[in-house]
Image 1 (cartoon, helix red, strand yellow):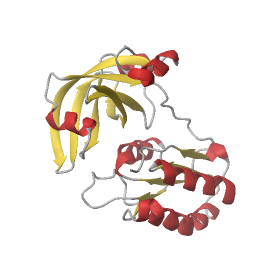
Image 2 (cartoon, helix red, strand yellow):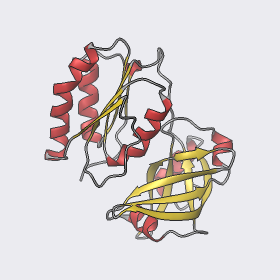
Image 3 (tube, rainbow, N blue to C red):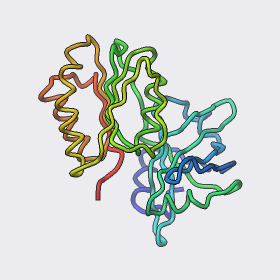
Length: 240
């Protein structure tokens, strides 16, 4: 199925990526800026299993060229073979497809590169940094790491999808996006050290734009001395 997908598809095929066809069963406009699609998985979950923050690559046509984007699975149900995907609507091939997707429509998906290692010992405090693109993954993470308290620095506004937080255990610190992510970097650098020193087994999870993620990841590991196995960092989008 790599044919027609350019060099990206060929590389993924060489890496033994698995391909599936997803079918839309329903759609809902959650907010003016977000659309949620319900899909059957074409055998994906049975073949690959499920883990927290799991994502798939979807393939779109963009001016006759292949275009792939990654999306986090929302509420995957292996027994039913279903999950949902949530799309932030903006300019681009992926959003254009999501806006008009209707029951019966299909889309090709590839699974390769996704993974999650349960931190051991279990986190005594989860410290997550993200934004609209990683919001479904943050929700998945918080649901998977048990009863640990969590602090989330979220770069976004009030019109984003809701975070699935427990107000007793989870604190969300919202940061407007300014200066290409610099405001978020400054806020996290100022506030993270005290939280790290106050807990024995922290777990730091970072999923922002690529540049911000790299900056914060380097700071956490090099400057704050958090071991690699207690951190996870992945750029979820590239700033223009």
